[in-house]
Amino acid sequence: MSASAPPRKRAALTPPGEREAETSRNTALRINGARLQQRIAQLAEIGAIDGGGCARLALTDADRAGRDQVCDWMRELGLAVTVDAIGNVVGVRAGRQSGAAVMTGSHIDTVRTGGRFDGNYGVLAGLEVIATLNDAGIVTEHPLAVAFFTNEEGARFAPDMMGSLVYTGALPLGEALATRGIDGTTVGEELQRIAYAGPAPVPAAAPRAFIELHVEQGPVLDREGTQIGVVESVQGISWTEIEILGTSNHAGTTPMALRRDAGWVAGAIIHFVRELAQEVGGNQVATVGRIEFFPNLVNVVPNRAVLTVDLRNTDEARLQMAEARLAAHLDALRDAEKVDIATRSLARFAPVPFAAQMCDRIEHHARTQGLSTRRMPSGAGHDAQMLAAVCPTAMIFVPSVDGVSHNVREHTHPEHVEAGANVLLAVLCELAGATPPAGALA
Ligand code: GLV
Ligand code: MN
Ligand code: MN
Image (cartoon, rainbow, N blue to C red):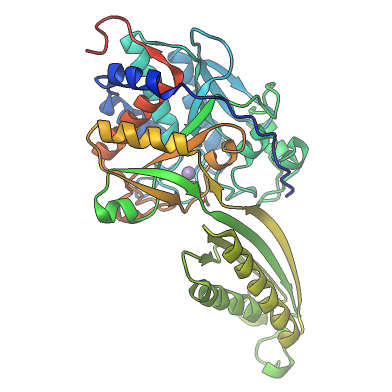
């Protein structure tokens, strides 16, 4: 993929003095936790899989059904819903002023073995904030928007965060639409097929600010019993597809020294990246998550193997070092086994810092609500890292039980689900300038 730098437009936020006044007026306002849980459960029924999880790969029929449900909820809440040319959906609640909206949101596509919280929580918490403001009769100064972005997961079509990349202008629409997925279809064909290639233009105008609420998907908050993560950055991501071409031959008759075994080379790469992560150290992680052998038969030396490597690090220099070491190892394997090896970059994102003043506001509101906080980087990729290039952005994390995610066992306790949404409510009220009718927030 090519990702040119998007235009950087940064809107000014409300001055601190006015902020404090708004904040104290908004402290008594709370979301309805039961209503939020109900929507999370209802959305999880679409594409439900054994164990309580979801399979709604981007642009599948299940994704379409999930989209339809969330769009219905948006309209029921009075939001003006638009769909853009890459299928991102934005629901806007008008403010006293027109102009850029304060935006929240995330994604509703899942990996094939996903949980019910990843992405969905942030979108549905955004709707819960809207419902809460509607119930209280609160009008904000600036419009509020809830968005869900297309193909955040990247599990079917790479790169991940595709919708938010196109939204912010970092990935050309044509390139995104032409992307071929793991099942041979293209993004453009599948968007048309599920009727989510909309008329709204991309790149879109930058929001006034963006804040994404998400489950942590890692063990840090759960282990130390902290309620809210103030996410200051997202680590760098490097995805590479590696294709190895050897020679297929008889498994019983071909002497080991005469083999050009694509399968063995694939195995050597898997072994190597684990060692690589340990050697590079720090918080380097490395994963081979997808692999295919050809012809994939018990008694045939594989002539072709395709696998993916996912490398991540919060430190760009270390991430580049890991990439260089992997490339050198591929050269060594090419020589040792006399195979051909081709690589293709599926996604490459440098680490992204979030806006300090946004992090401060999250921390402030969480503490005002009596919640414990810790500042932390995100190990997972998120749409917020793309929005950060065009407007003040940050993220709120809540604990994931045992740090499990991309797994049907993914779970966040109801009190944490509710607490995160209440922090989101308070931050959005401040950023959008909430003006409560007399007595509504007492
Ligand atoms: C998205 O979920 C990613 O971080 O892979
Ligand atoms: Mn996610
Ligand atoms: Mn995910």
